[in-house]
Image 1 (spheres, one colour):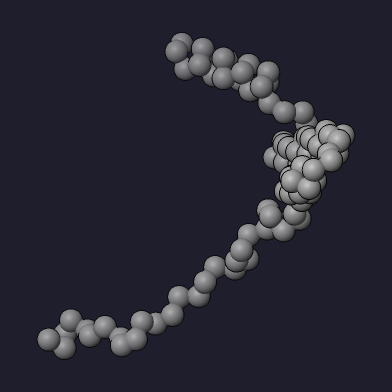
Image 2 (cartoon, rainbow, N blue to C red):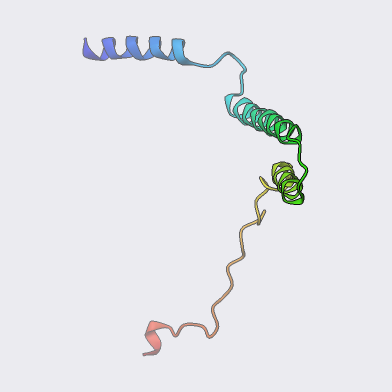
Length: 99
């Protein structure tokens, strides 16, 4: 009886929680976060550009903040696409049977 009850509740939970048929959850989460970051950066850049400056330090600060908000397309790419090849250590270790 315990196993039947557990199977019933697990099946019910799966039917309630599961994503829609054919939905790729991992891809949509990444796309959603990229879109949210782009909109947030655009909003902050607009707010910075609306500040009126008369001083050179204020203009420099605005330029620095605007440059920091620019998106870098290579920031998410890994540094090494392929793993490093293992090389034989030199000098080669001495075998145990050599004494």
